[in-house]
Length: 190
Image (cartoon, rainbow, N blue to C red):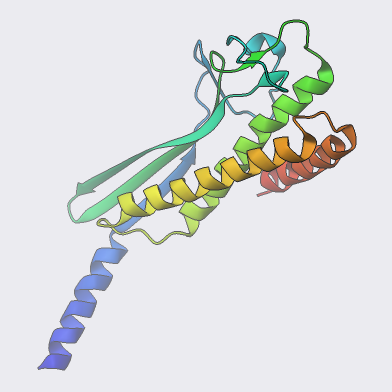
């Protein structure tokens, strides 16, 4: 009797797992007045930095970028569809440059902050694609992966600015430029 119940439970479990479909989509929405969504073919320009410069610091400019997602689940006729739209963005009003400090070199440093955000967003997508979702766990799994990738993004941004001293150490900046460009090439080839 225990074996029969076990096989009934196993069959029911397999049936519920087989009825879940997951779609993970990169979203590059049309830019709004304040937001630029990452596009590898479009680079930032100084007019994109519309915020007011922060307190005196070593920074010439600040890039405010992030990753986000929208997730939804629809259940119909015994089938569960999970859709996760992922995006990488730049906030114009929260990004700034000190007047008179604009240069191509500094803009490359800031562009790479946005690129690092994109690399972390791609990591988020890869982890989502590898995850095992059910109709009962998907929200927790997405939130956990998102938190992990945001932590990773913060570590990468801090390492980038820390090691380059906000771009002031030109030889280290050149190393990071190569590292980021190679990672972007790998991301594009997926």
